[in-house]
Structures are given as structure tokens and as C-alpha cells.
Length: 261
Picture 1 (cartoon, one colour):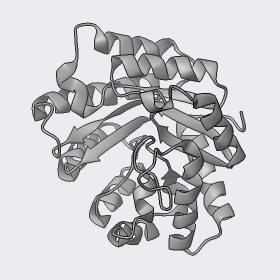
Picture 2 (picture 1 turned 90 degrees about the horizontal axis):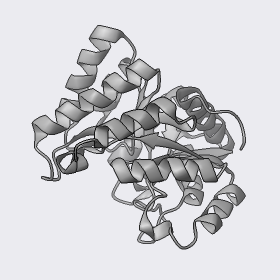
Picture 3 (picture 1 turned 30 degrees about the vertical axis):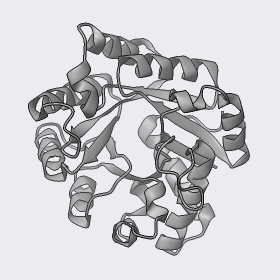
Picture 4 (picture 1 turned 180 degrees about the horizontal axis):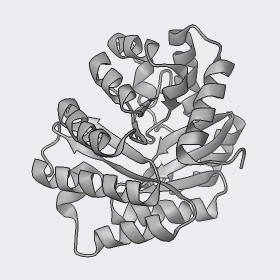
């Protein structure tokens, strides 16, 4: 069994066939998928979907590229969802992004800190988006680690270098890989993945984005997480079953998930 730890199933591209998408996921061995919010509306919808489909649970937050769009009351909605909704298992996605110029960096840092504090207060993990901001993210996490100890979080869709990965591992984080691990041009990323201990690995789709080979260019969906897991097995010199066992156990532990839905 596998767990897709990062899926944006609220996306309009799933509006017409989500039940079929989830059936394919189960047929591919996916026992759970975490529907990740990126703003107020998608957080609300992620919770609604999690309350509708037993395969799903939710994470709620405001992604760094959306913090400039926040309206009065939006953060309060995220907080209330995190505090009251049983199927919310994580905070985020949050983090920092220097690739896109959609939100002032100080505002991103403010909301990153808010998410971290909320996660700590509620005893939930948080989900980190990082794009061309590795040193900034590590700096923030290091301050959190120095004050409060091991950081219960995941670097989602990891694309950084080994030094960043090792720094995150040292602070207690998990590292999650998405479909880009399978791309021909991603040998450097596969080299990093080879060095990640089995007890810190997670897999995800980040759907509808980043479909793995051979589905690259198509809409990604949770069933395709099996392709990433298979690539990870090859990289690690392990069987797909070993990767499934470890990544599923890791996800259940980090997100407080039960067994099969």
C-alpha cells in the first residue's frame, strides 16, 4: 500500500471525474491521499472532500505564492479548520518561494511563521513548499529547531541539494519526492534521494502537476504515485515492496494516520 502525501484534488481538473480518480488510486494500491490546501477556498474544499471521500484526509494553509491575496478573515478560517476539523492532519502548505514574484518575501516569512506556530500549538506536522529558497527555509527551520527541538514537518516535492536535505534530516524533517524524480534530467535529484534514510522518505504526486514518466505531460493523479515509488526503489536498490512499507509507515507516523480506509 502507498500514501500520496501531497495532492491538490480540489483543482478544477478533477471536478468531472474525482470518484473515478479515487477508484484508480485504490486499484493502484493507494490507501490514503492528503488533499492539500493553498488558500482559504481550497482549504475549505480540501476539508469538504476529506469529509466526503474516506480515502482522503486534508491539510489546510496558505501557500507562499498566495499570501499577498489574503483577505481579512482568511487566516482565521484556516486556524478554525485546523482546530476543529477531525480530518485535518497537517498545516500547510506553507514555506518560501523566490522563483515566483507573487508575494513580498517578508510577507511570506510572516505566514511561514504563523503556520509553524499553529502546527506546534496543535501538535500537527506542517508541509513545506520551497522553491529557490533553500537557505531561507533552513534558516527559519534552524531557529525553530534551536528553540523547540525536532521539527515535525516534510519538505514536499523535494528538489534541493544534498546539503539542504541533510540539514533538514538533522532537524527531524521528512523528505518527500514527486514525479520529477523520474525525469531524465533529474539525475542530481536521484543522487540525493539515494542518500535519504528509509525511515525519512515519503512519496507524493503534487497532482495535478508533475506527472511521472511515462505519464509526463498529462494530468497527474494519486494512482501515479506508484511510478515515483518504483523509481525510488530502483534508486535505493530496494524492492518496490520495501519502499511502500517504509514510506507508508513514515506517512502514518508523521500525519497520525490509521491503516487502510
